[in-house]
Figure 1 (cartoon, protein in one colour):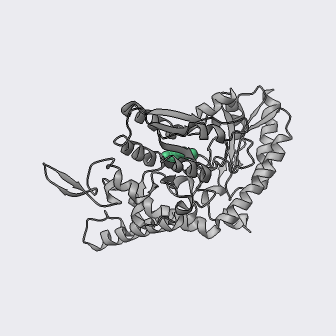
Figure 2 (cartoon, rainbow, N blue to C red):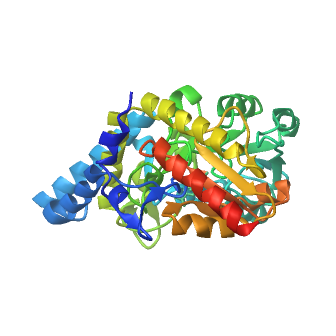
Figure 3 (cartoon, rainbow, N blue to C red):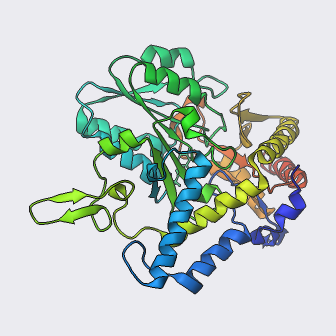
Length: 404
Ligand SMILES: *Cc1c(COP(=O)(O)O)cnc(C)c1O
Protein backbone atom coordinates (compact mmCIF):
# COMPACT_ATOMS: atom_id res chain seq x y z
CA UNK A 1 0.00 0.00 0.00
CA UNK A 2 1.16 3.43 -0.89
CA UNK A 3 0.84 6.37 1.49
CA UNK A 4 0.15 9.26 -0.84
CA UNK A 5 0.26 11.97 1.82
CA UNK A 6 3.77 10.93 2.85
CA UNK A 7 4.85 10.64 -0.79
CA UNK A 8 3.58 14.14 -1.59
CA UNK A 9 5.96 15.58 1.00
CA UNK A 10 8.85 14.26 -1.14
CA UNK A 11 7.84 16.62 -3.98
CA UNK A 12 8.43 20.28 -3.05
CA UNK A 13 6.58 21.63 -6.11
CA UNK A 14 3.31 19.95 -5.11
CA UNK A 15 2.82 22.45 -2.29
CA UNK A 16 2.89 25.52 -4.53
CA UNK A 17 -0.05 27.51 -5.78
CA UNK A 18 -1.02 28.33 -9.34
CA UNK A 19 -3.37 31.24 -10.03
CA UNK A 20 -4.03 31.41 -6.31
CA UNK A 21 -5.16 27.77 -6.15
CA UNK A 22 -3.25 24.69 -4.96
CA UNK A 23 -1.47 23.12 -7.93
CA UNK A 24 -3.18 20.01 -9.34
CA UNK A 25 -0.58 18.53 -11.66
CA UNK A 26 -2.16 16.24 -14.25
CA UNK A 27 0.40 16.62 -17.04
CA UNK A 28 2.53 13.68 -15.97
CA UNK A 29 2.60 12.11 -19.44
CA UNK A 30 4.51 15.20 -20.63
CA UNK A 31 6.94 15.19 -17.72
CA UNK A 32 6.85 14.08 -14.11
CA UNK A 33 7.65 16.16 -11.04
CA UNK A 34 10.90 15.55 -9.16
CA UNK A 35 11.32 14.30 -5.60
CA UNK A 36 13.68 15.99 -3.12
CA UNK A 37 16.07 13.04 -3.42
CA UNK A 38 16.65 13.77 -7.12
CA UNK A 39 16.91 17.53 -6.58
CA UNK A 40 19.43 16.97 -3.76
CA UNK A 41 21.49 14.68 -6.00
CA UNK A 42 21.75 17.46 -8.58
CA UNK A 43 22.76 20.07 -5.97
CA UNK A 44 25.26 17.64 -4.41
CA UNK A 45 26.92 16.98 -7.77
CA UNK A 46 27.52 20.65 -8.60
CA UNK A 47 28.36 21.52 -4.99
CA UNK A 48 30.79 18.73 -4.24
CA UNK A 49 32.24 16.76 -7.15
CA UNK A 50 31.59 18.41 -10.51
CA UNK A 51 34.27 17.25 -12.99
CA UNK A 52 34.51 15.71 -16.43
CA UNK A 53 34.47 11.94 -16.44
CA UNK A 54 36.50 9.04 -17.87
CA UNK A 55 39.51 11.18 -18.71
CA UNK A 56 40.96 12.68 -15.56
CA UNK A 57 43.29 11.01 -13.11
CA UNK A 58 42.40 13.49 -10.38
CA UNK A 59 40.13 12.68 -7.45
CA UNK A 60 37.07 14.68 -8.52
CA UNK A 61 37.07 13.16 -11.98
CA UNK A 62 37.34 9.68 -10.48
CA UNK A 63 34.51 10.39 -8.09
CA UNK A 64 32.25 11.73 -10.85
CA UNK A 65 33.16 8.78 -13.11
CA UNK A 66 32.37 6.28 -10.34
CA UNK A 67 28.99 7.87 -9.61
CA UNK A 68 28.12 8.07 -13.33
CA UNK A 69 29.01 4.42 -13.91
CA UNK A 70 27.11 3.42 -10.77
CA UNK A 71 24.07 5.10 -12.31
CA UNK A 72 24.55 3.03 -15.46
CA UNK A 73 24.67 -0.08 -13.26
CA UNK A 74 21.41 0.95 -11.59
CA UNK A 75 19.77 1.37 -14.98
CA UNK A 76 21.11 -2.02 -16.10
CA UNK A 77 19.72 -3.70 -12.99
CA UNK A 78 16.39 -1.89 -13.26
CA UNK A 79 15.79 -3.01 -16.85
CA UNK A 80 17.51 -6.37 -16.22
CA UNK A 81 19.96 -6.00 -19.12
CA UNK A 82 22.49 -8.81 -19.28
CA UNK A 83 25.52 -6.52 -19.69
CA UNK A 84 26.32 -3.07 -18.35
CA UNK A 85 27.66 -1.99 -21.76
CA UNK A 86 24.27 -2.69 -23.34
CA UNK A 87 23.04 0.51 -21.62
CA UNK A 88 23.81 3.59 -23.74
CA UNK A 89 23.29 6.92 -22.01
CA UNK A 90 21.35 9.29 -24.27
CA UNK A 91 19.74 12.69 -24.02
CA UNK A 92 16.32 11.00 -24.03
CA UNK A 93 13.94 8.80 -25.97
CA UNK A 94 14.12 10.89 -29.14
CA UNK A 95 17.92 10.64 -29.17
CA UNK A 96 17.80 6.86 -28.64
CA UNK A 97 15.37 6.37 -31.53
CA UNK A 98 17.44 8.54 -33.86
CA UNK A 99 20.59 6.69 -32.90
CA UNK A 100 19.06 3.37 -33.92
CA UNK A 101 17.45 4.82 -37.07
CA UNK A 102 20.79 6.27 -38.14
CA UNK A 103 22.48 2.93 -37.58
CA UNK A 104 19.94 1.07 -39.69
CA UNK A 105 20.63 3.35 -42.64
CA UNK A 106 23.69 1.21 -43.32
CA UNK A 107 21.76 -2.05 -42.96
CA UNK A 108 18.50 -1.44 -44.86
CA UNK A 109 18.20 -1.91 -48.57
CA UNK A 110 15.70 -0.71 -51.14
CA UNK A 111 12.27 -2.38 -50.72
CA UNK A 112 13.01 -3.59 -47.19
CA UNK A 113 10.14 -2.74 -44.87
CA UNK A 114 9.79 -1.02 -41.53
CA UNK A 115 6.59 -1.40 -39.56
CA UNK A 116 5.42 1.30 -37.15
CA UNK A 117 2.14 1.58 -35.30
CA UNK A 118 -0.71 4.04 -35.75
CA UNK A 119 -0.35 4.92 -32.08
CA UNK A 120 3.10 6.45 -32.33
CA UNK A 121 4.45 9.70 -30.97
CA UNK A 122 5.90 11.96 -33.71
CA UNK A 123 9.40 11.19 -32.43
CA UNK A 124 8.74 7.58 -33.41
CA UNK A 125 7.44 8.35 -36.91
CA UNK A 126 9.66 11.07 -38.35
CA UNK A 127 13.04 9.32 -37.90
CA UNK A 128 11.68 6.29 -39.78
CA UNK A 129 10.36 8.43 -42.61
CA UNK A 130 13.80 10.01 -42.89
CA UNK A 131 15.40 6.57 -42.84
CA UNK A 132 13.08 5.38 -45.62
CA UNK A 133 13.94 8.40 -47.76
CA UNK A 134 17.62 7.65 -47.36
CA UNK A 135 17.46 3.91 -48.01
CA UNK A 136 14.48 3.33 -50.28
CA UNK A 137 12.88 1.15 -47.61
CA UNK A 138 9.12 1.34 -47.14
CA UNK A 139 7.11 2.32 -44.10
CA UNK A 140 4.07 0.18 -43.20
CA UNK A 141 1.61 1.08 -40.46
CA UNK A 142 -0.26 -1.17 -38.01
CA UNK A 143 -3.79 0.29 -37.85
CA UNK A 144 -5.78 0.89 -34.67
CA UNK A 145 -9.42 0.34 -33.71
CA UNK A 146 -12.03 2.58 -32.04
CA UNK A 147 -10.80 1.63 -28.57
CA UNK A 148 -7.31 2.83 -29.48
CA UNK A 149 -5.86 -0.68 -29.67
CA UNK A 150 -3.58 -2.04 -32.38
CA UNK A 151 -5.23 -4.46 -34.80
CA UNK A 152 -3.01 -7.49 -34.37
CA UNK A 153 -4.39 -9.45 -37.31
CA UNK A 154 -3.42 -6.53 -39.55
CA UNK A 155 0.05 -6.56 -38.00
CA UNK A 156 0.44 -10.25 -38.80
CA UNK A 157 -0.62 -9.58 -42.38
CA UNK A 158 2.07 -6.89 -42.73
CA UNK A 159 4.90 -9.17 -41.58
CA UNK A 160 7.02 -10.83 -44.25
CA UNK A 161 10.60 -11.67 -45.07
CA UNK A 162 10.92 -8.03 -46.21
CA UNK A 163 10.27 -6.76 -42.67
CA UNK A 164 13.54 -5.69 -41.13
CA UNK A 165 12.35 -3.56 -38.23
CA UNK A 166 9.28 -3.09 -36.09
CA UNK A 167 8.85 0.06 -33.98
CA UNK A 168 6.11 0.39 -31.47
CA UNK A 169 5.56 2.20 -28.22
CA UNK A 170 5.01 0.20 -25.07
CA UNK A 171 2.30 2.60 -23.91
CA UNK A 172 0.65 5.29 -26.04
CA UNK A 173 1.18 8.78 -24.64
CA UNK A 174 -2.01 10.13 -26.24
CA UNK A 175 -4.43 7.38 -25.17
CA UNK A 176 -2.66 5.34 -22.49
CA UNK A 177 -3.12 2.03 -24.32
CA UNK A 178 -0.68 -0.68 -23.20
CA UNK A 179 0.39 -2.43 -26.38
CA UNK A 180 0.89 -6.23 -26.52
CA UNK A 181 4.62 -5.91 -27.05
CA UNK A 182 5.48 -9.49 -25.98
CA UNK A 183 3.32 -10.78 -28.81
CA UNK A 184 4.64 -8.19 -31.27
CA UNK A 185 8.25 -9.08 -30.45
CA UNK A 186 7.63 -12.83 -30.83
CA UNK A 187 5.91 -12.42 -34.17
CA UNK A 188 8.49 -9.98 -35.53
CA UNK A 189 11.33 -12.31 -34.55
CA UNK A 190 9.67 -15.17 -36.47
CA UNK A 191 10.31 -13.28 -39.72
CA UNK A 192 13.77 -12.18 -38.58
CA UNK A 193 12.90 -8.52 -37.89
CA UNK A 194 14.39 -6.50 -35.04
CA UNK A 195 12.10 -4.66 -32.60
CA UNK A 196 12.58 -1.28 -30.96
CA UNK A 197 10.17 -0.45 -28.16
CA UNK A 198 9.62 3.17 -27.16
CA UNK A 199 9.22 2.91 -23.40
CA UNK A 200 9.00 6.65 -22.65
CA UNK A 201 5.42 6.41 -21.45
CA UNK A 202 5.65 2.95 -19.89
CA UNK A 203 8.64 3.35 -17.60
CA UNK A 204 6.95 5.70 -15.11
CA UNK A 205 4.30 3.01 -14.52
CA UNK A 206 5.93 -0.38 -14.87
CA UNK A 207 9.29 -2.12 -14.81
CA UNK A 208 10.21 -3.72 -18.13
CA UNK A 209 12.51 -6.76 -18.16
CA UNK A 210 14.39 -6.52 -21.45
CA UNK A 211 15.71 -10.08 -21.28
CA UNK A 212 12.32 -11.57 -20.59
CA UNK A 213 10.79 -9.47 -23.38
CA UNK A 214 13.65 -10.52 -25.65
CA UNK A 215 13.43 -7.01 -27.12
CA UNK A 216 16.26 -5.81 -29.38
CA UNK A 217 16.16 -2.13 -28.41
CA UNK A 218 14.29 -0.33 -25.63
CA UNK A 219 14.40 3.45 -25.05
CA UNK A 220 13.29 5.70 -22.19
CA UNK A 221 13.58 9.28 -20.87
CA UNK A 222 14.55 10.08 -17.28
CA UNK A 223 12.30 13.14 -17.08
CA UNK A 224 9.10 11.09 -17.23
CA UNK A 225 10.43 8.87 -14.41
CA UNK A 226 10.98 11.55 -11.75
CA UNK A 227 14.47 12.28 -13.12
CA UNK A 228 15.85 15.38 -14.85
CA UNK A 229 15.37 16.44 -18.46
CA UNK A 230 18.08 15.91 -21.07
CA UNK A 231 19.00 12.35 -20.16
CA UNK A 232 17.70 8.91 -21.01
CA UNK A 233 18.79 5.44 -21.93
CA UNK A 234 18.94 3.13 -24.90
CA UNK A 235 19.13 -0.58 -24.21
CA UNK A 236 20.38 -2.61 -27.14
CA UNK A 237 21.31 -6.27 -27.38
CA UNK A 238 25.08 -6.46 -27.63
CA UNK A 239 24.97 -8.19 -31.01
CA UNK A 240 22.93 -5.32 -32.45
CA UNK A 241 25.01 -2.56 -30.86
CA UNK A 242 28.13 -4.18 -32.29
CA UNK A 243 26.53 -4.21 -35.73
CA UNK A 244 25.38 -0.57 -35.77
CA UNK A 245 27.87 2.17 -36.70
CA UNK A 246 28.44 5.10 -34.29
CA UNK A 247 25.90 7.91 -34.42
CA UNK A 248 28.12 10.92 -33.76
CA UNK A 249 31.85 11.45 -33.94
CA UNK A 250 33.78 13.16 -31.17
CA UNK A 251 35.67 12.69 -27.95
CA UNK A 252 35.01 9.62 -25.80
CA UNK A 253 33.78 7.42 -28.66
CA UNK A 254 37.16 6.61 -30.20
CA UNK A 255 39.93 4.13 -29.39
CA UNK A 256 42.59 5.65 -31.63
CA UNK A 257 42.58 8.60 -34.02
CA UNK A 258 44.96 9.37 -36.87
CA UNK A 259 44.10 11.42 -39.92
CA UNK A 260 44.01 8.21 -41.96
CA UNK A 261 41.70 6.21 -39.77
CA UNK A 262 39.88 6.17 -36.47
CA UNK A 263 39.04 3.04 -34.58
CA UNK A 264 36.03 3.18 -32.34
CA UNK A 265 35.88 2.65 -28.63
CA UNK A 266 34.20 -0.41 -27.14
CA UNK A 267 30.58 -0.36 -26.04
CA UNK A 268 29.01 1.68 -24.57
CA UNK A 269 31.43 4.51 -25.41
CA UNK A 270 31.17 3.96 -29.15
CA UNK A 271 27.74 5.62 -28.94
CA UNK A 272 28.60 8.25 -26.34
CA UNK A 273 30.50 10.97 -28.17
CA UNK A 274 31.40 14.11 -26.23
CA UNK A 275 30.85 15.08 -22.63
CA UNK A 276 27.56 13.54 -21.51
CA UNK A 277 24.96 14.93 -19.11
CA UNK A 278 26.98 13.72 -16.13
CA UNK A 279 24.82 15.26 -13.43
CA UNK A 280 21.65 14.16 -15.24
CA UNK A 281 22.87 10.57 -15.51
CA UNK A 282 23.65 10.41 -11.80
CA UNK A 283 20.27 11.96 -10.96
CA UNK A 284 18.57 9.44 -13.29
CA UNK A 285 20.07 6.74 -11.05
CA UNK A 286 18.64 8.51 -7.98
CA UNK A 287 15.21 8.66 -9.64
CA UNK A 288 15.28 4.92 -10.35
CA UNK A 289 16.19 4.28 -6.71
CA UNK A 290 13.29 6.46 -5.63
CA UNK A 291 10.72 4.72 -7.85
CA UNK A 292 11.88 1.29 -6.72
CA UNK A 293 11.68 2.43 -3.12
CA UNK A 294 7.98 3.25 -3.69
CA UNK A 295 7.62 -0.01 -5.63
CA UNK A 296 6.12 -0.56 -9.09
CA UNK A 297 3.40 -2.93 -7.86
CA UNK A 298 2.15 -0.29 -5.44
CA UNK A 299 2.41 2.42 -8.13
CA UNK A 300 0.41 0.37 -10.66
CA UNK A 301 -2.30 -0.57 -8.18
CA UNK A 302 -2.77 2.99 -6.92
CA UNK A 303 -2.69 4.61 -10.36
CA UNK A 304 -5.30 2.13 -11.52
CA UNK A 305 -7.56 3.27 -8.67
CA UNK A 306 -7.07 6.87 -9.80
CA UNK A 307 -7.89 5.89 -13.37
CA UNK A 308 -11.08 4.00 -12.45
CA UNK A 309 -12.28 6.79 -10.17
CA UNK A 310 -11.60 9.56 -12.70
CA UNK A 311 -13.11 7.60 -15.60
CA UNK A 312 -16.32 7.00 -13.69
CA UNK A 313 -16.65 10.61 -12.53
CA UNK A 314 -15.84 12.14 -15.92
CA UNK A 315 -18.18 9.84 -17.83
CA UNK A 316 -21.00 10.99 -15.57
CA UNK A 317 -20.70 14.42 -17.25
CA UNK A 318 -23.18 14.68 -20.09
CA UNK A 319 -21.53 15.16 -23.51
CA UNK A 320 -18.07 14.05 -22.37
CA UNK A 321 -16.33 11.49 -24.54
CA UNK A 322 -13.17 9.59 -23.62
CA UNK A 323 -10.75 8.56 -26.39
CA UNK A 324 -8.74 5.43 -25.66
CA UNK A 325 -10.99 2.85 -24.07
CA UNK A 326 -8.83 -0.25 -24.11
CA UNK A 327 -9.08 -2.52 -21.06
CA UNK A 328 -5.29 -2.46 -21.06
CA UNK A 329 -4.42 1.13 -20.29
CA UNK A 330 -2.55 3.27 -17.80
CA UNK A 331 -3.71 6.37 -15.96
CA UNK A 332 -4.15 8.67 -18.98
CA UNK A 333 -7.55 10.09 -19.88
CA UNK A 334 -7.95 11.87 -23.20
CA UNK A 335 -11.36 13.47 -23.53
CA UNK A 336 -13.49 16.16 -25.15
CA UNK A 337 -16.69 17.97 -24.29
CA UNK A 338 -19.20 17.91 -27.10
CA UNK A 339 -18.86 21.00 -29.30
CA UNK A 340 -16.17 22.64 -27.14
CA UNK A 341 -12.56 23.13 -28.19
CA UNK A 342 -10.07 21.31 -25.93
CA UNK A 343 -7.94 24.44 -25.66
CA UNK A 344 -10.80 26.39 -24.05
CA UNK A 345 -11.35 23.65 -21.48
CA UNK A 346 -7.61 23.61 -20.69
CA UNK A 347 -7.57 27.38 -20.19
CA UNK A 348 -10.42 27.29 -17.69
CA UNK A 349 -8.82 24.38 -15.82
CA UNK A 350 -5.55 26.32 -15.61
CA UNK A 351 -7.35 29.21 -13.92
CA UNK A 352 -8.37 26.68 -11.27
CA UNK A 353 -4.77 25.51 -10.78
CA UNK A 354 -5.30 22.28 -12.75
CA UNK A 355 -2.51 21.49 -15.23
CA UNK A 356 -3.64 19.33 -18.17
CA UNK A 357 -2.41 19.11 -21.72
CA UNK A 358 -4.51 20.08 -24.71
CA UNK A 359 -3.81 19.50 -28.37
CA UNK A 360 -2.67 16.57 -30.48
CA UNK A 361 -0.06 15.29 -27.96
CA UNK A 362 2.56 14.80 -30.70
CA UNK A 363 0.32 12.11 -32.14
CA UNK A 364 -1.56 13.78 -34.97
CA UNK A 365 -2.38 10.54 -36.83
CA UNK A 366 -4.42 9.39 -33.82
CA UNK A 367 -6.39 12.67 -33.81
CA UNK A 368 -6.98 12.31 -37.56
CA UNK A 369 -8.31 8.81 -36.98
CA UNK A 370 -10.91 10.13 -34.54
CA UNK A 371 -11.55 13.18 -36.73
CA UNK A 372 -10.80 15.67 -33.93
CA UNK A 373 -8.32 18.56 -33.62
CA UNK A 374 -7.08 17.31 -30.28
CA UNK A 375 -8.15 16.34 -26.79
CA UNK A 376 -7.81 17.42 -23.20
CA UNK A 377 -5.44 14.96 -21.60
CA UNK A 378 -5.26 14.38 -17.85
CA UNK A 379 -2.44 12.01 -16.96
CA UNK A 380 -1.94 10.82 -13.41
CA UNK A 381 1.02 9.83 -11.28
CA UNK A 382 1.33 8.00 -7.96
CA UNK A 383 1.55 11.33 -6.10
CA UNK A 384 -1.90 12.47 -7.28
CA UNK A 385 -5.00 12.12 -5.09
CA UNK A 386 -8.71 11.36 -5.43
CA UNK A 387 -9.41 14.87 -4.08
CA UNK A 388 -7.42 16.33 -6.99
CA UNK A 389 -9.57 14.33 -9.40
CA UNK A 390 -12.64 15.88 -7.76
CA UNK A 391 -11.13 19.31 -8.49
CA UNK A 392 -10.61 18.32 -12.13
CA UNK A 393 -14.18 17.08 -12.45
CA UNK A 394 -15.53 20.30 -10.89
CA UNK A 395 -13.38 22.28 -13.32
CA UNK A 396 -14.68 20.36 -16.33
CA UNK A 397 -18.26 20.91 -15.19
CA UNK A 398 -17.55 24.61 -14.80
CA UNK A 399 -15.95 24.76 -18.27
CA UNK A 400 -19.00 23.05 -19.73
CA UNK A 401 -21.35 25.52 -18.06
CA UNK A 402 -19.31 28.51 -19.24
CA UNK A 403 -18.65 27.37 -22.79
CA UNK A 404 -21.83 25.64 -23.94
C1 LIG B 1 7.56 11.70 -24.32
C2 LIG B 1 7.55 10.65 -25.33
C3 LIG B 1 8.54 10.60 -26.32
C4 LIG B 1 9.61 11.65 -26.46
O1 LIG B 1 10.43 11.69 -25.33
P1 LIG B 1 11.55 12.82 -25.22
O2 LIG B 1 11.93 12.77 -23.77
O3 LIG B 1 10.88 14.11 -25.60
O4 LIG B 1 12.65 12.45 -26.12
C5 LIG B 1 8.49 9.55 -27.22
N1 LIG B 1 7.54 8.62 -27.17
C6 LIG B 1 6.57 8.63 -26.22
C7 LIG B 1 5.54 7.55 -26.20
C8 LIG B 1 6.53 9.65 -25.29
O5 LIG B 1 5.58 9.66 -24.36
